[in-house]
Length: 51
Image (cartoon, rainbow, N blue to C red; front, side):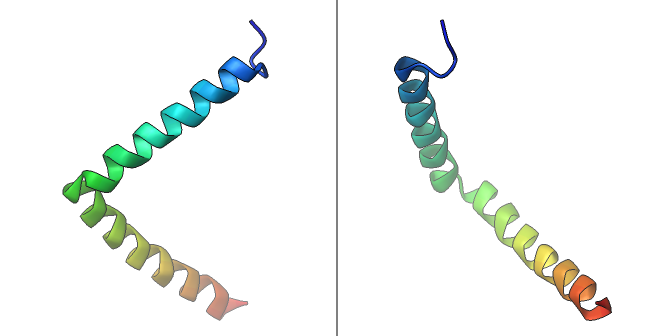
């Protein structure tokens, strides 16, 4: 089956929706994600400060 078929696209949309739902409900994941955002922002600030 062609990976660009309508069926594959629909399955991809459905799986993305399910995964987003799971991660949105997972409190530990959300905490890790927030900490990651803080570190990512700091790293960006260091990088852009050099430029």
